[in-house]
Image 1 (tube, rainbow, N blue to C red):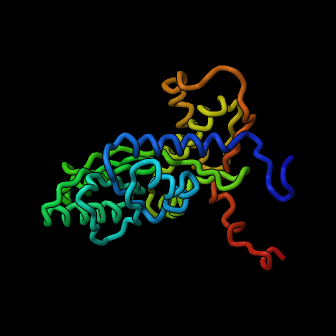
Image 2: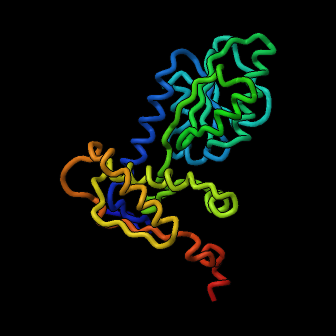
Image 3: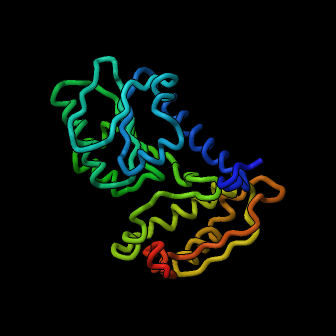
Length: 249
């Protein structure tokens, strides 16, 4: 029985949370020994919905969890590895570089692992190269994309996507959204009907169509738990987010 006021979990969003959790813990457990974990402040909230800090410390040899900022990082001698989880952001790359240079200046030999969420970018690698630390860090990606905020609300937590797309012509969001839809189909079955309203939505549908064959093997046979997908560009309706209880009137 569903508690009154709590939306019903229509297609099991817990599966999404478990998938992200298992990937995150697999990354951390693949690195031996005691380790420190640095998290981009922009994704610290969503990551806390996936796994708690206490779990990391008690069960996965994480001795320190810190917000990644432009400041020095003091580590114990037995903390041999530092794992960073960040958005593919230039400022975050400079924060990582600063901490690596600080450890080098103190002759501290550490292992550095950088996981960009939801995917790594060439620009960030270039920044690390310019900062002189690209050879010191192992780079990969952690596909933390769709975060279940409620049983009926999923979020990519890309708060600057509209600004980046319109003001900076950054179309990387197209691929991020397309990958998140593929993840839904991988977990819940191929969505039979997809519709889009707006230029960006139509472009994402085009990407899905053009790459359908190469991802066909990832989809299991049988029906889908999701009957239809409707995407609507934010530019189609810029007024609604500005509405409050008073301005609705």
